[in-house]
Image 1 (cartoon, rainbow, N blue to C red):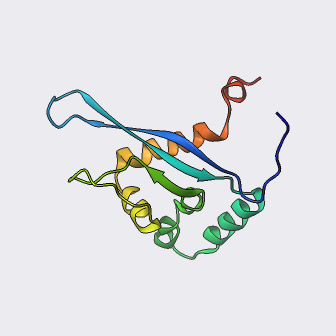
Image 2: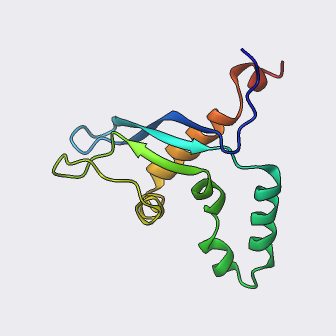
Length: 124
């Protein structure tokens, strides 16, 4: 397949969230969904990091610690609420979900996995 140079490269990637099982002590419950990412250019990432570094307080910087991941996020599917209704993707809901430790770890792991092919991770 030939390389396709696009203005915005979007792709879906599986996300696995592992949480302590509320019913079975000492066991893990696995939940999953699909997340749509977009490629973020090196210039965009550097500019965003520079903006965050320029903030004056640690509190301000912490408020923006997930901005690159949020910038790289476009959509999700197979996300439901307590009543099993589909939850529409919004930046506000993504920011809210990132407050959950297990969700945050799962999403960051998925994003990192999407950026490096298995061959790259082996050092080939």
